[in-house]
Image 1: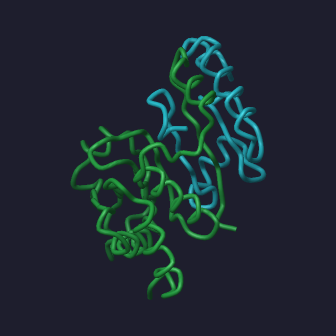
Image 2: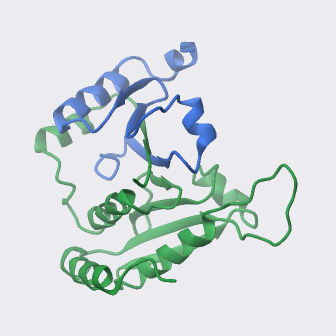
Length: 70
Length: 153
């Protein structure tokens, strides 16, 4: 998706090498996917479901609300 | 010691020759591991291996270009590319940055994703996404950053 869209960026993080990040994002199993640091789900989702999650994330307001999440 | 067996290497060489129709850039952000131990500052444990692996991958196809950035020497380049940890690999068509990053040594299962990302970056319209998905992505009202936590096994 990141290769196909300028709106989407993607980082794959090796959880064992970057344990402090894995801890910060409470990764207990992999793959774990986090969108804009607030929407998260486990495992690989089918394309349509993944797109829905991306759309929901992009649609609910952007950065102002990100700051409000704990 | 090479990461790729000769069987893997020849398979990938053939696959890349078939698929890659435009040049791909692998930009590795790394730091040299010195013999000097600085307390409180962990050394990059996988930087050397990552560079060795990417060197092998870049040798598989003329279309794959490897650029190595030493973040200690060029912190401004790392900042520009949004890189905060090493090793990080940025993958994209040569000369552009679609925002794809791999943090850590991409071995094990992650190597498959890495190879697929190279293949996608090097071939126009081969991302395998549905036309509806592409249209929806074009219509996104704001940016989305995806983090995927993985392990090699």
